[in-house]
Amino acid sequence: QVHLVESGGGLVQAGDSLRLSCVLSGGRFSYYNMGWFRQTPGKGREFVAAISWGGGQTFYADSVKARFAVSRDNDKNTMYLQMNSLNPEDTARYYCAARLNYHDGSWYVDSDYDNWGQGTQVTVSS
Image (cartoon, rainbow, N blue to C red; front, side, top):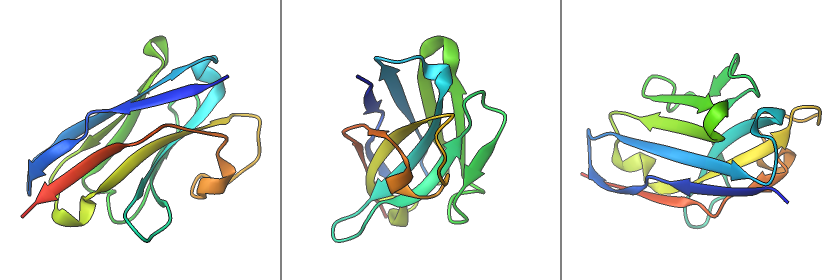
């Protein structure tokens, strides 16, 4: 079975940067399209960014496009999210998600992904 583990969250001040990592095990990483979502209390998961199986396509929410960058290293079974110029509105629990590249689905919809990690908390103080 596929297992995803996020890391890299923490408590930072506005304007700081963080890099999140997501490691996949139990499957061939290059078979998976990957995404990042975030969630705050009382809200559903919000799309943040996604990257295709080979890294050739990336997608971003408008709220983060100018500040965040998603990448992947298939030799390390790892996806990254570089987050710059963080602000308090970025405070959330961040989750990575995986979907086999031959499964139909939207890049932007959480229910269209097959596997999820446990999340990592990002808190940005003002």
